Length: 149
Image 1 (cartoon, rainbow, N blue to C red):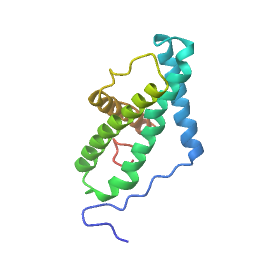
Image 2 (image 1 turned 90 degrees about the vertical axis):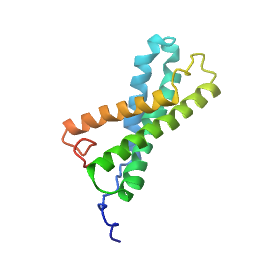
Image 3 (image 1 turned 60 degrees about the horizontal axis):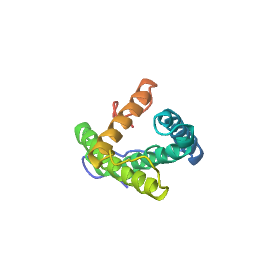
Image 4 (image 1 turned 180 degrees about the vertical axis):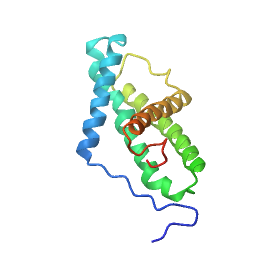
């Protein structure tokens, strides 16, 4: 099947689930360790780590949805790809914070997460992704910055 005019035949992104889980769970545990001292101490670490799985593990699926579903359907021009990706990350961040809020509510987390407004979460998720893609770019891997990832 040939791609529509003005698009590129992007290769789907694939990664073993084991690698995804190792990376995203590690990120969540580290975030939990960094945030816990200011949010209730060692006792809060597991809950904060669980909440951090939303942007780490959930964020992986947001990126995968862009790479494998939306990106191939967009014009291949770099500014369209970048703009769409930023908007997709913003929307993804807003959706992920809803998951954080519901999880915190269900777990009766005593710390308030209302400061995580939808807009704040969208912007924060963009920043997180740009930092992650900086690391990829510095290692010579496909990233947002080189247009290959």
